[in-house]
Structures are given as C-alpha cells and as structure tokens.
Length: 490
Image 1 (cartoon, rainbow, N blue to C red):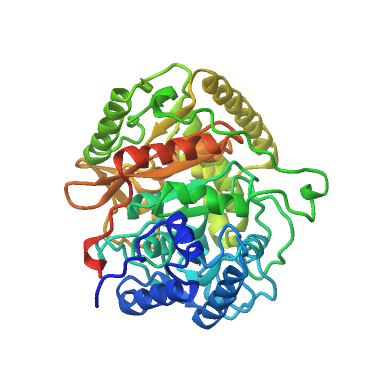
Image 2: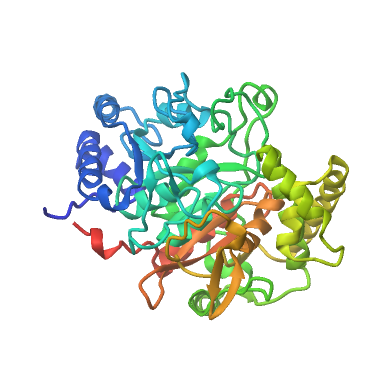
C-alpha cells in the first residue's frame, strides 16, 4: 500500500489541512484506522478500539468545519491511555478483576477533548496498575516498541508512545508519577509534557472501580503526548484549567508566557548524568551534541552549578514519598513483607532500594517531615530558576531495553555501559521534576548507533510550562525531532 501523506503529519499541519479542505476528518480517521489494522497485530498499542464512534465523530467534525466552526482539536484523530475513563469503554488499569468495568461518564479531560473536536480512536495499553516502564498485562498482552519489537516502548503510557511512533494519529493522552509520560516518549522518540502538578485536573483518571470525583493524588499528573513539540501546547491547553467542581469555583488559569522566544536568549543548565544513576554513552553523546549546538547558536549553557539540588538526597526523598503514596494500595501480604524488610534495614543504608522500602512503611509523621524537606527543595529550585531558565538532563539512563517481565522489579537489572544497576533506581531522573511538581518536556534527539531513540527532558519553573514547551519547539525547529521507525513506513 502506498504511504499516506497524512500519517506522520503534526496536529498543527493536519488542522491547517482540514481548515483549507485539503483533507477531511473522515479521511484522517480512516487513514489512522487503516494503519492500526495493518500494523497493530505487531505492536499491540491499541488495546480498546472505538472505530465506529470515531468515524461518527469525524463526520460531525466535517459538518462543523463546513459550517465554518473552528476548535483546537476539530477533526483530529487521537488516542487515549487506557487509564482514562471513556464512557462505554473498559477502564481496567490492567487489573484482571476489573476487566469488565465500564464507567458511565467520561473523565473531565476526555469531555474537554471531545468538546474541542477531538476524534478518539481508542485506548492504549498500560502495565498493571500503571506500575512499570514496560506495558503488558494479562488482559491485553504486551505492547512492543515500533523501533524494535523485542524491546519495551516504555511505560506506563507505553501504548500511547508506540501509537504515536507508528502513526496512529498525531496526539495521545498519558499520565505520569514515575516518568510515565516522559519515559515512553524517550523510548519511542516522541514528545511528551509532564505538566506542573495540578495544572490538569485528574477527575476520571481514576483506578477502577473508584468513583470519578475531584481528588489530588500526590505527584501524579496527566498530560499530552505528540510527535511534534508544537502540538503539545495545543492539547495541554485543552486539558488544563481547574476542575469546575472544586478549584474552578474560584480560580481561573492564567499561565505566564514563555520566558524567551529565541534560542540565543535562554540561560540553560545542561547535566548529562550523576554517579548515582549515570547515563550511558548514547545518551551522554546526544546531550553533549545538543549542548554544543545550543552554545553555537548563542544560548548561555552551563554544565554544572551549585544551585542544582543534591541529586542523591533529592532522589532518596522522592523514593520515600513515591512509595509512601503507592504503598498505601499494596495488598496486606506485600505490606507485611515490606514492614519486616524495613525493620531489618541499617540506619546507614542510604540506597534507593532502602528508601523505597522505608517509604512503603512510612508513618504519617515521617511523611510530614518529608513534606517539609520537599518544601525546602522547592525553594532551592526557585532559587535556581532566578539564574537559569531551564534545566536539560536525562530522562532514563539507556535507550529502550529488551522486554523483561520477571515479577519482582527490585530483582531486575538495567545495564549501563557494562555495569548493572537496580531497575527501579531509574526512577531517579524522572523523579527530580515529579517530586517538586515542576513541568518537564521530553524531547527526542535522534537515534543511537543501534537505531533506538534517545532524548532529554527540559525542566522548567513551577507553573511556567510554556518555557520548556517553547524551548522544545525551538530545538525541534532548529535540529529536527521525531524520526519515523523504518519498519512501519507504509
């Protein structure tokens, strides 16, 4: 079959084509459905198809376009992470007991996407409980990386990143607490934005069968994914803004503009790793090349700064606070084992694994003290952003690795330039933005020597989401961005 001219276009480009009648919403939707039907038996990104309703929405979009209506997402086909409630479709989070749970109402973000004219093709695969950087479960099976089917696409928004890389629409909705937007974007060579904490209300991004009510889940966010940096603000601005059921009663969103609009005006701190969790040669090389390119274009680039918070201490704090939240939902037998293990820890054991164990069994008093430490860390970041506009650093230490479904993640290992590291320790780099609620944009930087995507994250100041987003857009415009996988180029 001949390659479609639309499959890998950006949302901005497709919107322009729709408004000038070069293509219809139905044609774009049929194009995406055709790709899914041709390729998804190999990738397994779309775990729940909703093609009939998508085509109906596309026909409605074409009628609206014919009437001269304009909406941000009007006629654009997109996908949604399985963890979002979409009325009439299953929401399982990969848990087999919930395989038949179907919410009656859309998540607030889905309501907003539909209201903006978006055409939802279906839902994308996730790991069980959204708790892995691989995307597999007993209900829907394993999602593969379009650049190498034997490797992970990342997680937990791995189905979304794989769908984008395979050309299944220009946009997807994901979520993030342990890198679950940025990690799959990194592994599949696409873009994602972890918004400032609470910028996008999470009502309806809810573990089944809990009710979809306004609720803050510590550090957890929802956000946009795309193949182009310029598309991220398009979807973010649809998703963002207070929930009308609570904060929206008295608050309105008014994000500040990006600090700068030209690369040469940015003051950047570029960090390529840390001994606690070093990046491998491929990732370091990509970061070094980017730093040199940015310097050559006149940006102010520093490679170290005493203002950067202590990475080891911040990572230890993040592990404790993350697991004190996630640990609340662990089964009683697992919690009992964690308590027994934590009781045997030496006070001198400062490993990240030890901190995760301490977090699982944390008392509320301990959490209160950790929350105080987090407030101090936020103050350090505020001080840093008086000198720098953004921090560029790794997302993960290596490109996508082969599938590893061994049940105990603490016993898995990740190899970094010949040395093994504990698999969950990879939380450290995503965690520095997550812990303090900072916005962070994942940006692809081409392919490794083995043909696998590499990239970085751009961390910006609190509620200044437009700054890392603009920097990502400028980098894409100057140096290029997404590179389609060769095996799915028809």
